[in-house]
Amino acid sequence: MACQCRRRRGSPVVAARRALRANPGSAAAVERLRAALRRYCGDFLESENAGDWHLELRDHLRRLRVEGLLALGAHLAETASHEEAAAV
Image (cartoon, rainbow, N blue to C red; front, top):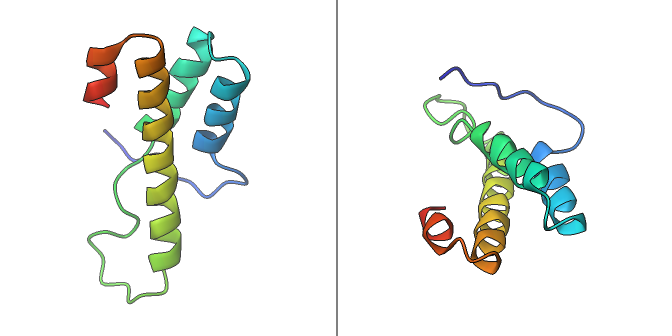
């Protein structure tokens, strides 16, 4: 799978989490969050010898992913999709 990481204004994960909070019954909001999480391609500059200038951005992107996974897992648990929630 090719990495589709791009620098954008705002985060697709944050927008998807907000959409899910606004409409927790929406299957489209759940899929939007899943799609945003699939875009995560691993740690930023993970295999590069880039010094430490990128560490703050790497940590931020990782934190967004973790927060998105937690939101998805919590939503799935609340909707009694326990096996799916555990897999997240």
